[in-house]
Image (cartoon, rainbow, N blue to C red):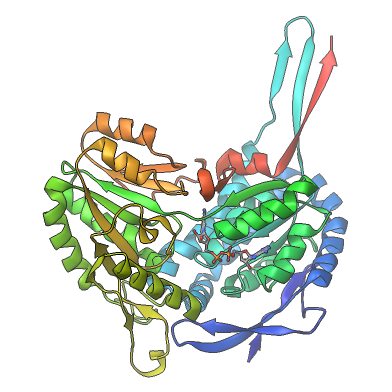
Length: 480
Ligand code: NAD
């Protein structure tokens, strides 16, 4: 069985304790590789390598650093098919999705920050007749990047790229559930001529190697994407050490549909915003609110379309949905369907596991599910399910839908469908969320601030926000 390895000091190596854990293929439910069960000793080894590399990397000219990161981006692009196949196999997502979204976005992430750093400038503040301030923005040193399983290389690179571009050395940990593309990234870093120790990739469990990254005193900043509970723990651990923290956490996003929207466009996009990546995108709109006058028409058309969705093995080019990421996750999602029924909901379509044939019969497939008849305050409508399950709820007024939309502890993204421009502005202004899409979903400009409010996180990623996070400002004043 293939053994994945850590990437430390520019080389692949086994974990110091020699222990490995199973890596499952969601499409078949079978173990197909082993990953290092790393711990604090591996973190120590990576920190030593990063400490040695930091003076070299941080003092390199930005043109040189940029060129290495551009080569890294091109290296992934060259190995596109290998990365796409690996991402789909590891995560269960359709190959078509990995080919159109995940891996191209990882290529863009590196390219975007490789070039952004060339334009990054520090500020100066002139004081008339007194003197001038200039603000240096220096790399922090060694930073930790911890990412989840839903968009594995996409989110891993979204952190690593700005951290490296800004001149930091990185200790990165992908999710233990989807380690494969992060493992491949080491090879690309070698080929791109990345100096040893600049990028270190450690595999293993959150509670051991992840925790050791968060607790290591020489790792000065933690950029984390994952669940709100984990984020809370990381904040509690890192805050007393005065580490810089960027936390991108869970969501329970509203998709608000007014009767004056472009119905066909809305329906097409709502299929994606509900079920893309098996509903396992933090930005998916899992609570759909529909203006009452459109409710019956929407319900009929949506349920009909959802029930025709093709759930199939990830290699099937016709698959709309592949497998969800793991058995425990599949069971969690199904438990929420049961909860919804207990809470008085009616399952309009889906709600069950799909058993495919042959080698895929043990895979983790779920039928996309639409539920109605639930109160907006119930657990199904308040807790993050993170699977192919949405609820639909009618509303009468803007005021009412805003109250329902803003009622959860989360505030990551919101989608709004209307052709009334004034209403769009009014609603966008009042939605408690870090991102609002109007008549669109998941349109991403990498320059924009990305992140959530309330329990969806602290801080923003993207563009200058990310480069500011990964640098420490130092103001220098010179008297005239
Ligand atoms: P998770 O919190 O279980 O794990 C995320 C990462 O943290 C993994 O690498 C894990 O090993 C690590 N980890 C776990 N415990 C840790 C600890 N004590 N110390 C350090 N690291 C630890 O989340 P998940 O199940 O992998 O991902 C799903 C969650 O991620 C959902 O809640 C989803 O909404 C969220 N998410 C948020 C965004 C965003 O941008 N806001 C994007 C994608 C996913």
